[in-house]
Image 1 (cartoon, rainbow, N blue to C red):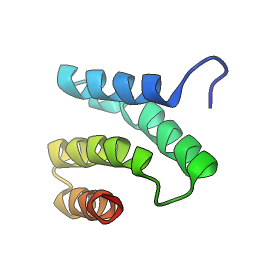
Image 2: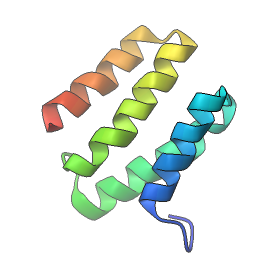
Image 3: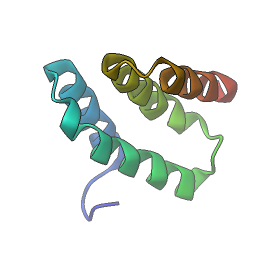
Length: 79
């Protein structure tokens, strides 16, 4: 995790990029958020639901429906 940056801030940044259509910039903060959350809480913690859903939205926008489905299923399993 970048020094001085919270996981929530990374999630918010990724969501903003998605809403602005800045898809090429989304993956880095999103992946960093997921890695930091998994490291801190484990791979099935509820704090992963939001970034996994953001990643699913990104994949849908890119036309990667199987990838989006995978992320949605993972998030659903956690919820």
